[in-house]
Length: 187
Image 1 (cartoon, rainbow, N blue to C red):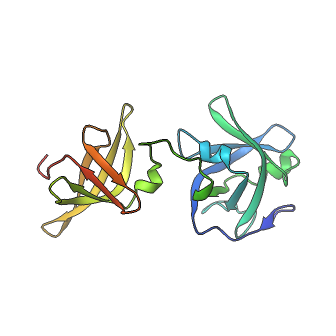
Image 2 (image 1 turned 30 degrees about the horizontal axis):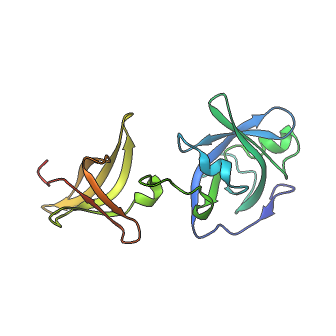
């Protein structure tokens, strides 16, 4: 474990939200590559859980708790500073670390807005109740998001794509793990 970093348990609802790419300046700040174009979860959480990179140089083992003093947008990237990181050398030692935050620390989504992580795994059915598949991924096409569904046909795995827009999506029932759409299997 790096000096100053506290060993921790990864929360059960932890979501990977980014990765530390490099040191920034000489006072312990570091650059973060967020996994989302809207990194609000990085800004709202003051406790980040770090895991070492899966490959390459590992400067620590296990899960480490990082107490974030400040995280902010800077020229199209995110920079952050933590209590345990006082200088450039300490910041460089974090290079490659994967950042996780508890899902419970995400800001509350507005009405009819959803975090992608909450949609993954949901069953999708049409208005007639016909199962169309399970959300396996989401794609951002610029003007809209597209649900990528996985399903089986004739014993073979298949994919189906449905635009995630109000014209096609009737309801999203997160507790019921179900999305109802105006879509037919032959579209």
